[in-house]
Length: 569
Image (cartoon, rainbow, N blue to C red; front, side, top):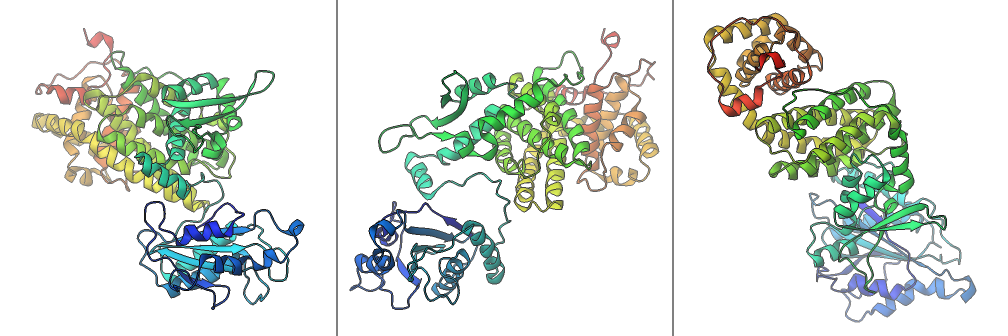
């Protein structure tokens, strides 16, 4: 249940006409009163003799009793209370009780206060009510409305429990502002799937993803097709910025501007500059060499996988400020992957990024310098261009999505342990989307590797099975019956042919995370081995000659690991 307090107004009659009217899209059906300060309050929706003006005069009576200089300029208070889409349809009696609880907890009409403000609750749809009140009590005093929005939210949580409704996770004041109903209706008229506020928030996050300085940030915003207006001081310094969707204009035919801070708390220019300042002078991270012939998207994704691995270690530490920085960096990498992926995977990654955006903010102050490696990885992903989703590109994308999924799950647990309910829920939703994206990306490369592994001679399969049993004796039986065992055999075979010590490589892959909770241990090991084979230089040593079938092109692209230059001649 979501209570939303709207802007205060100065005309009671105008709001009454809206509540009882047909609505912008004829969506107001059977508007009627469900509760009010006085049981005898006229209801223009059900009583043909009652008028809007009668209800207005009754509500405004305490206001009009004051002299003009004592009347508040904005005396109309308005709150809507909306049930979740999956909640059952409540009766008028239920909504009446909810309305009374809402005006009591907010201070409009405390229980037992006979001199409280006058109010009325109107229902014109199954899933919500509107409460209108006038902000002068019957005794001529003003109501005490300190922090009424927070109190309304707290009461909504109790109402959900009492009525068995969907439990909304409590917030901590760090969420981005929700679009207003007027913004939603305008988006529908313009044929937009989301409001301008939401579209701009996503585009600003995408422009910020991996941007290493302010100039790059604004250049990328312009490249996104966003209108940008900078606030310039007399000295010429930029003090702030606003953005607008092209073609979105107000009634005066002027662009509808949103400042960065109105989009989300972390998108104000001062907050963005702190992110840049903390990472500009940080030394470059060690280079990840990999195969010299790999494409730029492949190299960028392996860099991101390595940075995400490091982030996992920091999130498991006791340094909450460092962990909070990793969450911001993970959000940037997700945004970068969403921008450079193709096909249905892109839609899933964009949804994952939208959900995870909520998980990047909390009241824990982030050590921005700790996110440098992730921000640099996001920058490389963006500048490397789109990944084709097949061959080496597909395998590298599966590598980074595999470790990113684990990182987002870790983020959900991290938030849950600290009581950040909304952030934990958002991270879990992002993880669900990431799982779908990973499965779609990994299916092709894994199938190619399984085919390759199945075509190996029995002696080669037995040899690699012995390695697995020697390194992972407690998991060998489970790995033997998993569908992915042939892909694991394939990647071990290719690693050995490239000159790697497969026992050492498998030991390192298994030690990088716990495996018992993995849905498919073999798949996790495949991508860990694939990544380690990419970033690790094999020690030159003689190879044991062994006949095996030639790998089909798709399999070779998926599992081919780094081979020393001398071996490629």
